[in-house]
Image (cartoon, rainbow, N blue to C red; front, side, top):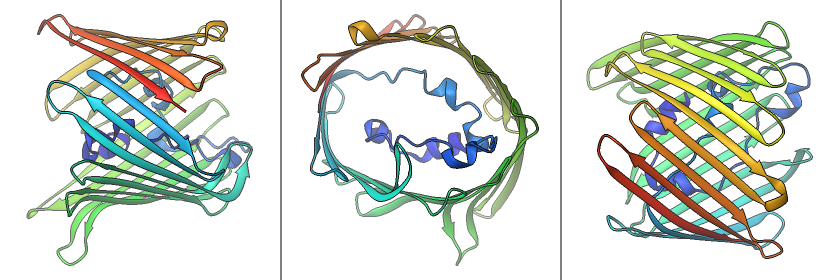
Length: 313
């Protein structure tokens, strides 16, 4: 489902305030495996987020529950300004988890992305994502996660049109076989423009304290990932994705090095599309300021993209 959501997202929302969302924390105490879409999450989080140009972000907490964000991004192709707001509710379900969570971001062209997440109990979580393009609704996704003792059921509907019987329906199921092994499946059904299709995907993951191996495969393609925690400061990941629709594949290696004594976070990327990249984040304590440098180079296209940014607050 993660790829489905990403495909409909507005690229300008990549820097939206993070939701800091975790897999149903309370249920995980009972060996809950999390959700099907999180099978590759640990490797995805290691990947750097490159950009080009100059970016400045400022965060301002108006209260313990409300925060606003201003983002100014300047580059040669298209410069943009975005305003974001985040509200975190008073329902405390863990030391670092409170609900409901509402996040909204609007750019200078009037495009809006909004997210709503609420965990009604330790077992049931509701998610809603909406995007507009100007005054028109571009996409709408509503889903829920139901966490049981050793399994999770997820249901999502995207762009529903009940009058015409169109839209997308996604159902996930992930079962924990042992504390280390979990397997599951995904059913995606889509109908629209007089056509309909159904795609079934199977997946599994084996994880230990220091490494994780996950794979999903079906008629849509193959996706595998491997994660290894070398020590407290070094993490590496390898990911392979192949699409049966486009008959393309890509292999990526990512790594992250944390130097806490210097307040440095370094990320690197190397993939089979002849792209290499890296990013460097430096916290300038005691000031609430962070500097970011990112760069990518594609050997095949001989294209360089460099970004310089700062985050205040």
